[in-house]
Image 1 (cartoon, helix red, strand yellow):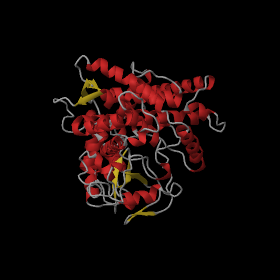
Image 2 (cartoon, one colour):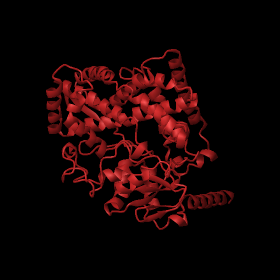
Image 3 (cartoon, one colour):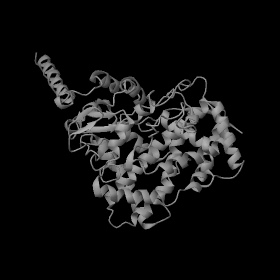
Image 4 (cartoon, helix red, strand yellow):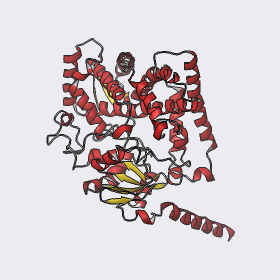
Length: 476
C-alpha cells in the first residue's frame, strides 16, 4: 500500500512541477506558440535541431508570423521569425542586452559569463575591442594552407585503401588545429591524432545534453551531476594551463595579444578562450562538413568550383589573402552552405528591461528574445526554393533566385554583436576547400544515410552539426 501511495505522490508531485514549468505566463498568452507536448517529445527522442525547427517552427514563418513563443531550456522564449523585426532588436544592444542566463543549465557554467558572448555594456565593449582586434590583427592564411596540406595527406592515406573518409571527424580535427595554432599558439596536433581536449569536451557536451536535465534544468539542484561538473573543471583547468604556458612563451597569436591587456583578468581570458574554442571548433567544423557534403552531392557544382580554383591558383600555389576575393563562386558555395545548414540555428537570448513591441505583438519586460536564423534562412517568403542548394543565388542577389532585399543571409548574426570571427571562418573554409578541390574529388556513398538529405547530430543548444558524414575520395 505504501508503495502505491508513494508512486501516486511522486506522480502528483511531477504533475504539479510540470504544470509550473510549462505554464504559459498570462502576459505571454496573446502570442502564437508552439504546442508544448510536441516540443517535449522532440527533445525526449533526441530529434535533430534542424528537423525540429522545420517541423514545429518554420510553419509559423511561412504563415508570416513575426514571432512565435517556444519552450526551451526550462523557460518560454520569443523567437523572432522576421528579419526586419530582428534587425530592430539586434541593432540596439543597449535597449536589448544579452539576457543573464539561469544558473541551472550547466552549459552556461561551462562557457562562463566573463566573455564577449554574455557580457553587456562597457564590459562587453572591452571584450569586443580586444577580441576583434586580436582576431583581425592578421588573418592566418598561410597557416590554414599548412594545415590543409596535413589534412590532405591524412585523406590520401585513407582514400588509397578504398575506404570512405569520415569527414565530420576530420573537419573537427582541422578546425581544432586551426584555432589552436592561430588563436592560442598551441598545436593540439589533432589532425594526426585524437586530441584529449576533444575527447574531454565531446564527453562533457554529451553529458550536458541529457534530455531530462534539458527539460527540467532544476534537476541540477535536486540531483547534481558531480562527475560531470568535475570534468568541466578539468577542461577549464586545461585551458588555464594553456594560458599559463602562453604567458611564459609568447608568440604571434591572438592569446599573446590579449595577454598584453592588463585590464583583462585570467578568468576573462579563460572564458574567452573557451568561447573561441567552441566557436572555432564546433561551428567551424560543422560549416566545413556541410560544404563538403553539398559539393559531394552536387558533382556539377564541385566541378565548377574546381575549375575556378584552378583558374585562380593553378595546380601548385598556396592561396594568398589577395587570391581569396577572386574565388567568387567558391565563396558563394560557402555562403549557401552556411544558409542551408547554418551551424547555429538561433542566438543567445536578449531581454529588454521595458515593455517593447515586436512586429504587431507587445512583449513584456524581461522576456527571453532570440533571433531564429533557421526560420529566416528557410522561409519561402525570403528565398526561392529554400531547401535547394544553389550557390548562384549569392551571385545574383536581388533577383528571383537570390535573397529577398529585406532578408539577407544572417549566418553570423545581426547588428554590432554579430560574430567577430566572420572573416576568419570564411577564409578558413576558402583555403581548405580550394586546396581539397585541387587535390581530389569526392562523392557520397550510395548507401549513406546522407544520400538524400544531410543528417545532423542531436543538439539541444541550437547547433546543426552534420554527423557521421562518410565520403569516397579519389586523388586527382
